[in-house]
Every structure is written in structure tokens, then in C-alpha cells.
Length: 115
Length: 112
Image (cartoon, rainbow over all chains, first blue to last red):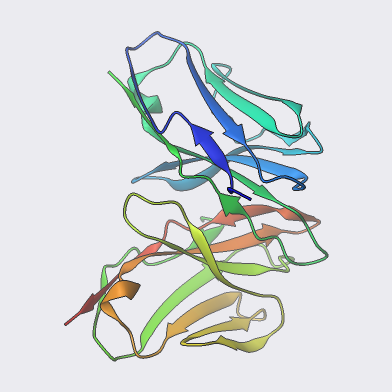
């Protein structure tokens, strides 16, 4: 398996524009997570899905952020409109949850810069 | 109080020494604990997980868990320059084995 695949790897956009980040989880994994990483706040969980259903979106910072998972092999994170403070690295991760073990496999991330 | 706390470092150790990385957590019901390593500009990758009190060894790495003290640590023996990275502690939430909360990480520098 190629692992978790994210696109694009880098995105530079102007304030106010819509940004869409994409993720393909590892086949067979039933959980998908979106994280945001900044120097100040570290790795923050934004939202996660189980079997394509959003379970917890309490980490989504504002209504400008939305996420979807239309099928088991694809998810998007959208920011509309984008703001400079959204600049961060966004990671997608997937996992298959056992009784106690929850190894999350991370994609390579999307580095977002909003100018 | 943050849910998972780590000293940001940098922690500097000479090559060949033991590096000790520490983490405390606030959710007393947490069951599983993870150590991830993240090289600069890369994504986090799992090193070890532990869920029972005591020590768990894997090669040069040893994870230690003390649930009574809400404390988990990672020891790296015979530290190598290639171990220089940020080490993230992650903890699951009570009742939701899937949801991990990460600490902000400790940057480790192994010097020659």
C-alpha cells in the first residue's frame, strides 16, 4: 500500500480564496483524521471520521472549515474563505482501531500558506 | 492545563548517551499511549505504544508508563545523530480508543 496520500503538498493562496485539501487513506482503514500543526499549538485534531461518518468535529476552528468523506477512499478539508492565520501544515491520518492499539498512519502533509 | 504536556526542549545529549523524554497527561481514564517521532519537514511516525504499567522495550527504545502518576516516558539508549528529531507523545481519550491527543513535542538533539 502506498500509505496515506495527500494533495497538494504545498499550497499558496491569497486571503479570501477557497482552499481544498485532499486525502486518500490506507485501504481497509476505517478511521480518518484531519490534523493541523503549527509551531505554537502543535498537532491539533480538527475532525475525524469513522466509516465515512463524521464523529467529532469539535476541533474545527470556525465555520470557515468544513470536511467531507464521500466514500472510504477519499476525504476533503475545505477552508472558505481562507485567512493568513490558517497557514499551517495539515495532516491527514488513517487507522484501523483494535481494542487498545490505535496506530495512526500519517500522510506527508499539505503546507498551506495564506498571504 | 493542557491535556498532554511535554517539555519543548531542545534536549541535547551526546552520541551514545541515554535520552529521556517525558510526558504527563490529564485524562486519568486514558488507556493507550503512543510515542511518535517527527523529523523536520516530515510527518509523524509511530515508534512505540504502551498500555500497561511498567516498561516496554523495543530495540534501543523503552517506553515507561505510570498510570497512578499519569506519566509516560521514552528512553533512547545509545543515542545516535539520526535520533535527532521531535518526539510527540499521544494519548487516547477515555471511551474513544480512536481519538488521540498529542503533546507539542520535545526536540531532541544528539551531538557528536
